[in-house]
Image (cartoon, rainbow, N blue to C red):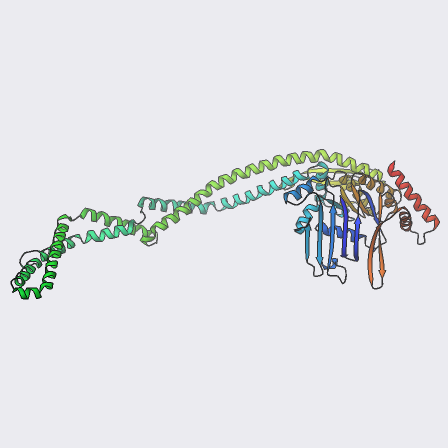
Length: 558
């Protein structure tokens, strides 16, 4: 429950520290004193929208924080644990600057506004003075019935299944819608890839074929030229070796003195003779071992022709065929894979649809079982609120198409007078009746809430007299099991509270400030007297207020 609320420079509040306890706390004050400020500050801590108007005039920023005791709130503890935040305390803080910027913290750690809102839903439930307007919408009826049925978590899971089901359905529709075009492309790719598979051009094969073809095509010319070169080197007349032999023989015949002077060129001629003899042997070996291969040449040229023909057919260069083959194969594999994806999606859609139907049936059964209990409980509260002739019903109709929240449409119907058929709440003419119906529904819903801190913001508008006293008793009864804070203008309601918080506006010089304080018994009597309408607190008004307070506290214990 909420244990502390600290407010700094918010609206017309300069500095305020409130210590709060369990039970029912009445919040009262003159019109315009700032009762809404208290709920506004709490709303900031719970992630409500903020702007620069929140900051007190002349100040740089507004700073509000709320501390909660969460020992009995497993959902809040689980939320904090999931984010590795301390669970022995729960402090929500919000700062809004005069420029309109906002920052938030949870247990001292920076947090988003969405975090505040998510955690806040586990901590406080606010029933506003305009709650009866929300009750005119059917989605509110369903949510309240789900709360009474204990189905809030189940409905969230149902919605999650529904959204996953619809997402898979959309994906399946998208894939199958382009099925004809994809099939045509798939058939073309199958033919092209099969043709390239049959060609089976290996990596690096093309340059190897081109080199071999060049060699084979020029083999005869190469042999002829090699034979000619070999004969040029031979000892036959006119051959290089024959000429070298004659040259060295002539030089060897020279006198010794001349031979000594020509020793170097003689040595070079001898080396040349040895090199030419080696070259001649290699040339003769090449000529003797090389054979003409016309069959192989024909085979290589045929293979190259196939490569060039298919390259032209696919509008690519021959050396691009390998990468082209890989690209087409990958595209075909992707399209073939889409067939598997479609089948898998069909199975997934069916599975999610079946899961949703099963969950929806369970939620629907829980709603139908809770509808009677809910209607009976509201009927009892209406009797207490002087509407015992009214008849309240919870109508459940089947939807024509599945929705995220299930197969049922929930409607609250009311017959305000005997003999009249029940009609939707939106058609109830009397504002006072609608306020009491709204209060009865909220009280029943609050009894089933798992959140112990409840805030009622002027939900008693439109009631008075004895009915107002009953309203106070209902709110106090709720407070007995947790924490109820109620903003009220009715002394009959305030007299029932366990404690009474008074809000007053003080004008000092050029500044206006709001002050809040828990009243002692004498203070409560004075405030109840003011609420009773006494401009001057006469002894009679004070006595009436004292009697009202005593009666309220006495009836609350009996």
